[in-house]
Amino acid sequence: MTDMLASSVPAEPARRRLDLPWYVGVSIFWVGVMLVVAIFSNWLAPHSFTALDLKYRLVAPFQSFAHPLGTDELGRDVLSRLIISIRVSLLIAFGATLISAVLGTTLGFLAAHFRGVVEQIVLVLADFQAAMPFLILALSVLAFFGNSLPLLVGLMGLYGWERYARIARGLAIAASAQGYATAVTQLGAKPARVYLRHILPNIASTLIVSMTLVFPEVILLESGLSFLGLGVQPPMTSLGNMVGYGREYITRAPWIMLTPSLVIVMTTLAISLLGDWLRDKLDPTIR
Amino acid sequence: MTAPLLSLDNVTRTYMSRKGLFGTPVGVQAVAGVSLEVRAGETLGIVGESGSGKSTMGRMALGLEAPDTGRVALGGALMPALGTADWRALRKRAQMVFQDPLGALDRRVPVARQIAEPLEIHGIGSPTEREDRVRQALELTGLSEDHGRRFPHELSGGQRQRVVIARALITDPELLVCDEPVSALDVSIQAQVVNLLIDLQAERGLGMIFISHDLRVVRQISQRVAVMYLGHIVEEGTAEEVLRDPQHPYTQALVSAAPTPGAQRRQRVILTGEPPNPAARPTGCAFHPRCPVAQDRCRWETPALSQIGPGRSAACHLITDTPSAGMAAE
Image (cartoon, rainbow over all chains, first blue to last red; front, side, top):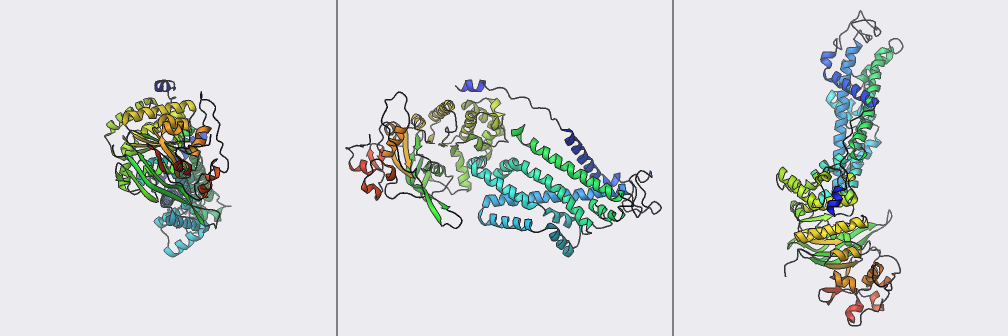
C-alpha cells in the first residue's frame, strides 16, 4: 500500500528561473546605485559639500563642467551636496526602519507570549504612539535634547513600531492558537525557537512589506523635519534639508530643490515596488 | 500485571467563559472527574460527541494542559509543571498526532527538516545520525526521500499525516495521543493511516490514546474503549464488548447510529433534544434529558462509574441497580 503511494507521486518540478519584472530590475538597480553612492560618497563627491564657489552662484545644470548639476545660492556644488545627502538620509531611514521593526516585533512577540498584563501594557503603548502625532513628539524631543544624528535616528526609530507590534502580536497569537507553533511547542521547543525559527519566518513577508511602507515614510518624515529646520542641521545636509533650503529659490533656481526631490521620489518608489515583489517571492506557497 | 504507562486519576478541567461584555464568567467543565489508565502496547479509544471533553482529556494526558484537580502520571512519575525544563524534556516520551496535518506543519520548511526537529530540540544524535533517522522514519511511514524535500502544501492529506506521524515517532516515544487523526482524510486514506498506526504500535509497543467520533475506526484500532459524554466517562470496556453489546443508553444510541455493512437492520435509537452544552450541564445524570429510558432519580442523582463485569464499567442507575434486567431500549 505504501509503496504504491510513494511511486505514484511525480518528481518535484525543477525550480523556475528567477524572472524579474522590468520595474523590479529598475528598482533593484536604483537602490543599488543609492547604496553605492551612500557608501562611497566621500570618494564620489567631486567637491566638498560645504565648499563655496562664489564666482559660480546659481549656475544651472549642464552649464559648467565643474558643476554638472549646477550650484546653489552660495555656489556650493549641488551634485556633491546630493551625494552626501543621500548618505545621511539613507542612514537615518535604514537605521530608523530597522530599529522600529526590531522594537515593534519584539514587543509584539512578548505581548503574544505572556498575554495578560504585558500584553495590555504593550497595547496601551501602541495606542498611545498611534494617537500621538509623531511630528509633535519629534519636535518636543528635539527641542529639549538638542540635535544630533544618533538622537535623530533613535527618535525616528520610534516611528511606526506600533504597526509591527500589532502585526507581530496578532499573527503570533493566531499561529499559537491553531497550528504549527502549538505543534512545535508540543515537541518540546523553547519559546525562543518557536518564535524565531518558526513564527518569525512565517510572518516575515508581512513584516517586510510593512517595512517597505515605513521606509519611505521615514525618508519623508526626515525631509519634513529638516524642512522645518529641526532635522539635520546645516552645515550638514540631507535630502529634506536641501529641499527645505532650496525652496526660496524655486522660481529662479529650481534645480536646487528638484534634484533632491527626484531622488526622494525615486528611492521611495523603488523600495515600495521591491517590497511588493519580495512579499510574493518570500512565500513558498505561491511559487 | 505491569504498572500502567499513563494514568489519569480523577482529573477535572474547567474553562472560564464570559457571555457578552459585562456578563459574569461561567465555568464550563470540559472534563469532570475522569480516571483512565493506558498500558504499554495498548490502544485506548475515546469516543463521544463534539464538546464531550475528548480532546481536552487528550491534551491533559500529554501534559499540554494542566488539570485543575487530579493527577496525571506518565511512567509512574507525576507530570511536571507546564513549560518547565523537565516538562520540555518529557516531550520526547509523549507525542501527539493532530487532526489537521497541514496546520500542524510549518509550511515554509521542507518536511524532512520538520521530522528532524524533535531530534534537534532534544539534542539527540549528530547531524548524520539525524539524517539516518529521518530516512528511517520516512521509510517507516511509507514516504520516499523525495517526499522529504517537499513543502507540506506539495503533499497530499494522507502524506502530510504520515509526516506528522513520522515526526511524532522519531524520538521513540512511549505514548502517542492521536486526536481525530483521520477525520480530515478521505475514507480510502483513512484506512491506510489507521493501518499504519496499528502496524507501528504493534512493532514498537506504544501506548496509544485514539480520540475519534468514528466508531468503525475506533473498533478497528483499539483494544479498549471509553465513551465520554459531557466530560464524564459513561462506559468503558474492551472495544469488542462495548461496541457489540453496549450497556449505557448513550453508547447504545451511538452504536445504533453507526452503519454496519452486512449486519441485519436493527432498530435505531434516535436521540432527541439538544446536543450537550457543557456550560449548562443538566442535574443528575448529564444524559437524562435525551435518554429514552430515563427515570425520576436520573434527574437528581448522578450515577457513578461502577464495575458491571470483568474489565467493564458503566455509569447508569438502570444498569447498576438491576444488572440482570438489561436495557429495555431495543
